[in-house]
Image 1 (tube, rainbow, N blue to C red):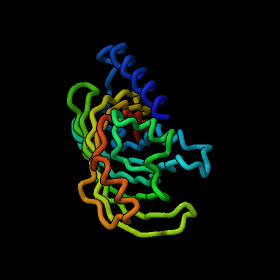
Image 2: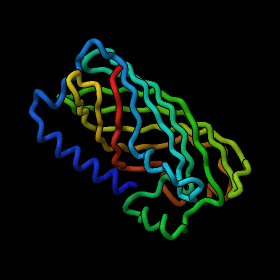
Image 3: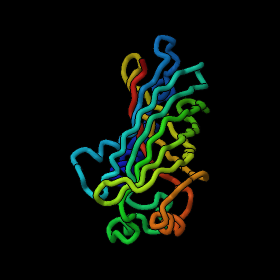
Image 4: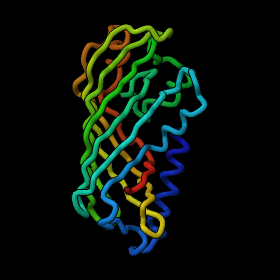
Length: 214
């Protein structure tokens, strides 16, 4: 799925430079102040059922345009991790999934509601930050609860807003983001042993968000 996201990101980037200035960003229609969006990556989980590597990722954003430059929002997200999130691309992330050498002895479910701030920088170019307090639930391979904990998850994004249609209501936002989780509590020993081998951050994740203005 990450390969699909990367390809989508590249195609969208090319689309940006193919558009004229007039068409690339017309996003100041006072009739539509709210935005609802989700990351395309969650579509990759459809049909995977109970597969070991199914992250069961669900994520939605509701945002409010304060003005042409400033946008605030609320984020809801839940996902299931089967291995540490801090394994970087250059650490052989894909190989680790194929070999299953870093798989948890179960799963980590993380769920939270947080806030976001998005700043439009130039035309469609934007930067944003998201803060997501998460409730953690550790499960064994039979989905029996082992422990609960707390994580403070933050992410930092740079991307481009591309709107479509006569009123520019439909949009996509190809972007790259980095995330960290400096506060992470009550991790069971077997899970913590794996987490400690890797970083408490992940760098340069490509993504594509799809949304509508309301």
